[in-house]
Image 1 (cartoon, one colour):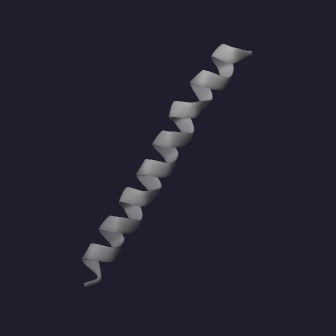
Image 2 (cartoon, one colour):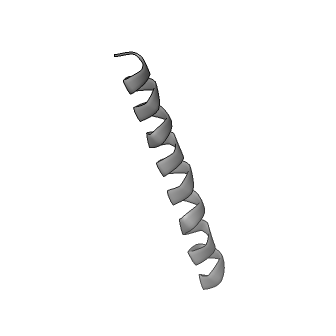
Length: 31
């Protein structure tokens, strides 16, 4: 159980960081 929880944390971090990077690139393209 603990291992599964630890394994799910980097996945959510990766999704969040990629989403933020996508928004940032989109924002800088439209300036």
